[in-house]
Image 1 (spheres, one colour):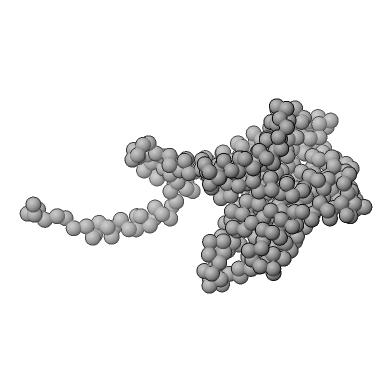
Image 2: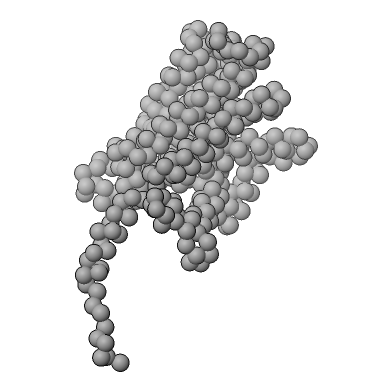
Length: 371
């Protein structure tokens, strides 16, 4: 290890870099990578034409939505086949607040995850009251019923024709760019909210709630013995996943003229599930890759004149990734990088240093007369 204790190189099995987590280089590497990525995504609204720039905004919003599904499937170990319902619920909540009640866009956006959390807890509680392993069929039924419910109350939701977003988000007076291009301001707001959502998800994973969710997913009997309410933890985990999904749906509204029921059908929910499984459920970057697939696959097919269903392509990618990378593409790439870059935590180093004196004390030199 180097003098600073941060980076060391060894030649065991090839050249390998060791980084001490929490060191200055570690913070610069992680912070610089995340900041640079978000700045690059934010700048794409000025680089791409209007249509492609709006697709980037959709990509960021879907990334937030898939964070919730990833939390439910990866962290909580539960099955969710109705995530499109929560995304649609967030979209309708934000649109109704704007179009029906004249509230600001940000007010509707703030209300969306609250409504999503409540409905997510209701769906999770419903499945648990029936039977714990019935969560999959129950969520599948919710995904089927949601479009019918929206169309049944068309006088309020807009029905089959959809509910239009009657006004665009007002740009602030300090905005120095062309006001005739409102999609740029929308894009900046979506990226900013996505940053907050990413930080919130990170804090949730590291919180006591996140630890309890992981403990229940790994061994519910041991978690119950430790005093964790297993049923409540599973329901709350589902609620948090639905809240992030609804927040992503609300972000979609910021750059969407009409919200329609057919956009949140069963096939859309299955597409979300396939995308996050291909990306990887144990890394937040898996949600980013999944969102990229959801936006990129239809765009490539449309520009290339292909007529296959995007859901069919996602299903094929899911089969291939299951065979080649069962844990997800991002996780497979991360494991490959871990073979070249080793991240060592300070607590592990302290334990090694504490064990070193005892190892020296217990060392017994060989008898020089022994052959």
